[in-house]
Image (cartoon, rainbow, N blue to C red; front, side, top):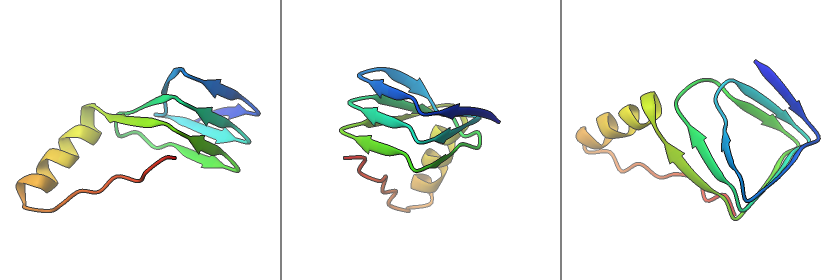
Length: 76
């Protein structure tokens, strides 16, 4: 996994897949997630939106097809 340390993202589009975020901050960002492993530690999210694509989106569609209500975390 790629390590990202002490970075501040402001109003950017950020791909999360395959990254480990340490001491980062996301402010007003569009976070894109496709299903690959990602992690964060001591990281702050404020007013961000999440877009699920690729495998992550497929998983949501399958779960909804089974009748599950899928709830995403509010990254505010």
